[in-house]
Amino acid sequence: MATAKKAPAKTAPAAKTAAAPAKKRTPNAAFMKALTPSPALAAVVGSAPLPRTEIISKLWVYIKANNLQDAANKRNINADAKLKELFGKPQVSMFELAGLIGKHVK
Image: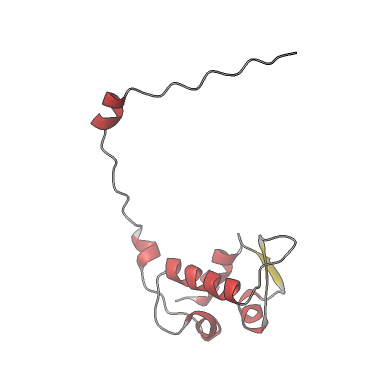
């Protein structure tokens, strides 16, 4: 029994897409505000004031450098001694990360 292939989806004509220029996204000022990390967070990311986005990026660099992602489920982060101070528990989900960091910035 042969199955029929679906026809490729039609795209909008090129003239219509060229008429609407892409708008440049401006970053939210709240994310770009430099925040001072707590002493526990400063042990991981440094003591200089950083925006939230940079703090999360530096945390991921630390997590990957120390091989702290769970091997079975990459969405979980296993805490070492420094991260256990931040998280308050031995393992957290990557989705909890930003919420837990919010308590450690001013």
